[in-house]
Image 1 (cartoon, rainbow, N blue to C red):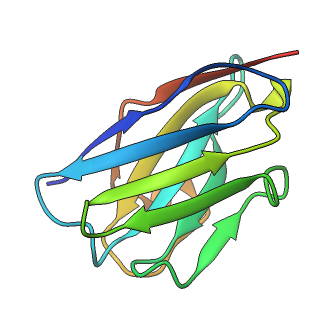
Image 2 (image 1 turned 90 degrees about the vertical axis):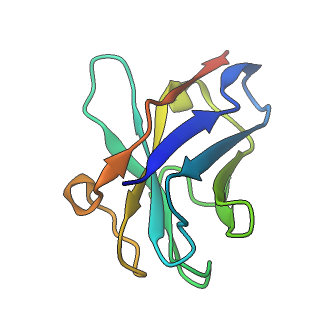
Length: 124
């Protein structure tokens, strides 16, 4: 089993930046694909970004492409989400998730383990 803990969320002004981290424990994630999702108040959880086991393949939602960057450090068993040019509509709880295959996916159901989430609030 894999445990995931997100960190790095907070309050930031529009146009600002944050870096979210997702630390895994329980077993190595070096051969697993990882994803980031988010859920805004009153909305369903949505896909944000995903990365393959070695970082060679990345997927992004159209709404974040060019502003958010997913990366990973397998030596640290950690995945990151660098967030830049943030907008108020990026306000949400951000979750990381793992699927025990090497190929990433854009759908929630493809992921098996989830973190508890970290709040990101972007003020206008």
